[in-house]
Image (spheres, helix red, strand yellow):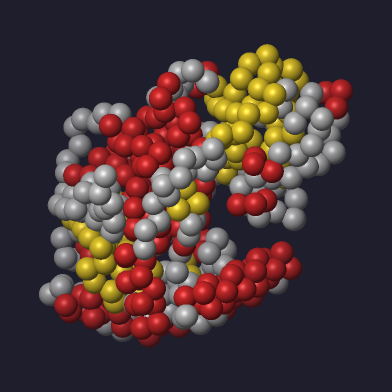
Length: 398
């Protein structure tokens, strides 16, 4: 089977990143060795419990002797997993074999990369097993699968009755822990791609228009409104050049995939929206607008997986280093975006050229937001950890 991979047709990015993009274009992330499965007889699943030692909390699978099973961690425990004391007398018994999905966090990008990565195991016989997962609200009110997260499971072929949100310790006849079929910056597998092939093949929508050019905005996404400033200018540029502006959070997953696969070219600020390239059609044109200096390891593998034509454009204003998940992000009609627009013959709305008062307001917001976010010790620790990882990656690439 031939290996298809993304192609960067335009790179309007920082000069020091051009080499990394070109290397990513030709890197072979496809894992050839078979994925493994660990089965834990009489396994106990601990629900997620918030803890400062790991991003999403402790929890996971214990064996019959109460020993933690490391295969149930996510990213070696950095994101999720670990033992904690629990009331052994209150363990709920369930006499069936389940497949362990891992944690569920209401974050779309992590969901479609990390969290569903084990579900390759159920594809040959989608109705055979129930899926056990550990819900965790991570600042959101709903802890169980809901909305487009739940729709993803339905499109995979799972019913609500097959989904178990482990909210108290539960012991099962057996717990199957499939290996991850995708790991950020590391590998993907054909099994991972099959998850997305299955979802796409089950899409059924009717009565929707199609648009040749689409700009997926973050402008009405509450989390983005809290952490980002400047997208209005970017959105105005694309709207003035014939792009239909669509807010993905107002659509079902099926509708999002329909619009993406029916257009010739889509543009979006980097993040969960651009991770949706996993649903893209072959040969699609994609414009990824980078909102921060640090290259996103998830996106790099996704770019490589998909046979699409990608233009990468830096739209961030570089001030201080910030965390991926925390921000703040200041973006706008950057020098790189101006060059991209010029190369493509795009018309630029006059009000984008310079608005002094608007710029000053954004900078005031940025400095105030940065101060508030990183006054928190845990947030500072996350930023320092990210900076160490970035330095290590730079060393490895030299």
